[in-house]
Image (cartoon, helix red, strand yellow):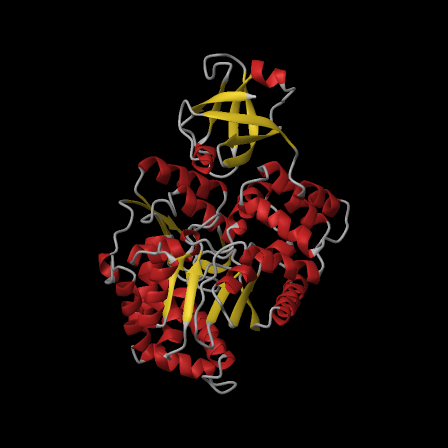
Length: 497
């Protein structure tokens, strides 16, 4: 069937979609979510169809192409295209196979990932793949194949140095900006550490969101390699690169499902490390109520799995289990966390000491992993680098190499509207709910509003007086601040005994 193109001027952000009038659809017995093959000259594409129920949106004899299809076909309005019925991608059969509890082969996993990257699968089909891996846990062999497939379906940041250091925290704890402390510590020793980080999905800030307060974080691979060559490291947003691109598409469908399949968690993390040529990797698993991992048994099992996949990929891996029972640092939200980082690196008295201890601990492990420090002396060496000012100097070099925005913590602007939460009685802080803190900070506007968030004055085991400020909420919107305060009244994150 020949049809005239109408540019719908709508982007889906992923899946390839076209619109067909119901009269034309009836001629080919097409239904919503069926697939068609569209050909224009030497270009062709397979897309999912939506049905136009009237002539208002689309006349018979026309086909509405969404932006992704327009670009793929190099088409424009009034071009003529040919369409025919297309089969579903073969990867759908492989997803069904996993749903049945069977083990996937290398080429089957590679085909699923290729189809995800090239927008051949709908979100529903990707969700079934996620669900299949969640209910029928992948074997270690499958997980390694999934990791390699995810990495090799994107670009690889090739670095001709050894070792190449990297770290990752599986998340779930507000604050916890250890990356921005340990990267300059490691880079100051001459080691190479190309750190690609994520933006927030469900937290008040990701490392990329926080670093963006201080410098640019979106670069192409050529620019990143130049930064690394000049200053030994970087802290950039991985989403601006084509590194393991299937990961973001899988995460997008995981979010509303609120599930995190272990095999995909492992593959997601290790694929990103594989794609930046990391050779020595530190993995942080925060453990505690309200974090992603709440039982020690689960943490130990995940630790073992990381070590196994590290061995299979020929990477040197150190996995640590840390305290994830409360927020780390004082600032929660991009600007507040960036201020904490600079205070810590400068040795200012306002620095958060819990973040300092954890960052030095992790940096020490990495120095030992790389052979820069003798076993047991990494913490001392990392502390020396920090207190000498070398790490702060290196951080300034990284910030300037990435396009400086802010350097002095006092110049970092915070939300205009504030609310102080005060202790109703004296006592000791016995618990802090990570999820509640994150929710309140996000309702206040973080991370989209980088100046929004929460500043914690008290942590667990700290004593408080009646009427003393425990934390302060920041926002640039009266309405959002009001909503955050209402959420605070419903779910108080602090327990005081």
